[in-house]
Length: 282
Image (tube, rainbow, N blue to C red):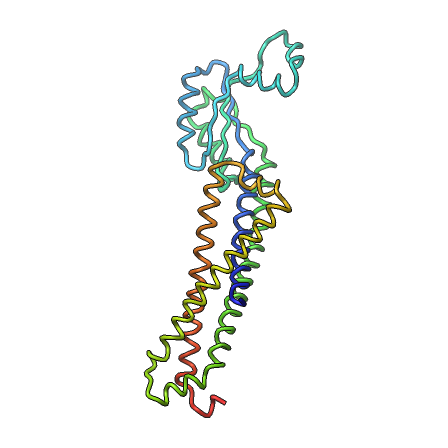
């Protein structure tokens, strides 16, 4: 049970990391760059550029917005009377709205993207606009929080592994006289280790399964207490599938970690008491 609780803590740490990553993606998904074209730009050229941008590394979506579509969107948001003063004229230009992967929401990246897009397309492109403050805040806030979280995660991981190691070592210590008795009747080291190591594998597996069950119970508790928060973490089917894959990896990792730590902690503890002198057993 002690190992199960420690593995539960590690699993919880992994889930917090997943949720933090989803929160970061959610916060960055609406940050975009708008490429505005000149009035004489042909629609076929704009659509060609849209297709080229869609294949660029780091670009999640590139969407062509015609002047009529932009007008309809503005009228829907600001009201139809917003264009009355223009006597029905449409001053809006054709544009491409570009959204990036969360990893590319960096001010240096967007500046490089702007220069790359404008180079050689000065005849078509009038301007490449983005909110510099948004990019600075999005990249800075999450970067500042990531390092402390990694440090805390590393410390907790070290504490958990150390506690599991010494817990198993104490369990083997309590059976040191049994080990010595087996040696006195002629048992080889491999024969002595076998039942202990098989038991360690079983205990590690069981501890991992119990930790997974505890995480599931904790997840159901959160779903009942904060249903809207949990739903916001899985807004789309794609995100849901991605999360299920990550959860499966975390759960598998807990079982593997439980078996791995239990096996090697038992192995090294056994070596200590197999080769220890009799007078030191006391």
